[in-house]
Length: 176
Image (tube, rainbow, N blue to C red; front, side, top):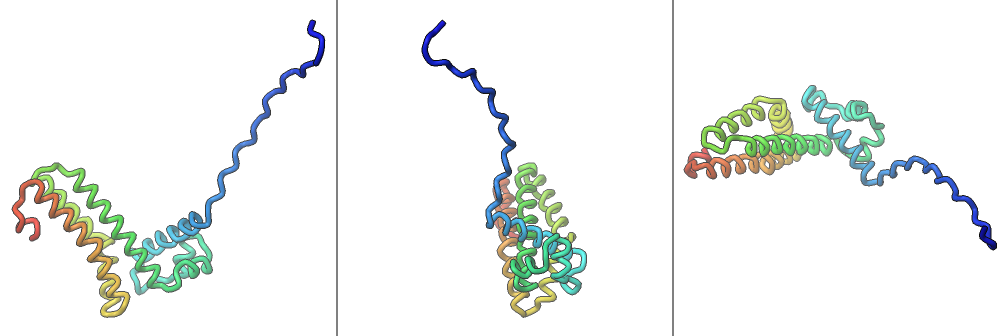
């Protein structure tokens, strides 16, 4: 028997409370709202084109308030242009994945290029872009749409040219 201080029996470990999810930052919440609005805009633009496009309907499809929609996108065209940019980013990424996944032969890349061209130029993404070019005409909207098309689609075309050159096509042929 030990004389002196008595030691307390060990305490059972506390059951820890489940960790509360970390609160998202304002920037994260803003980005989530904008993403919802852009995806809703893309969905409606593909279904109704620009003439039938209503920003109030975008807010409803996105599940956000009309006030939130106008806070993030002051004008209809601001939202439309960001939606088109997202479409171009997505189509560009699909094209680059197709290049990477293609058989790295002349025939393999040419086949993949034809598939990629058909998907884009015969699909909703191109029709959306074409609609916006036609509606925009010589206005600021039309000029912005053409700039986006040049920035994103020309880059995709250059990626295809480089891939074709890498497998031995002579320089003039991939350009054509």
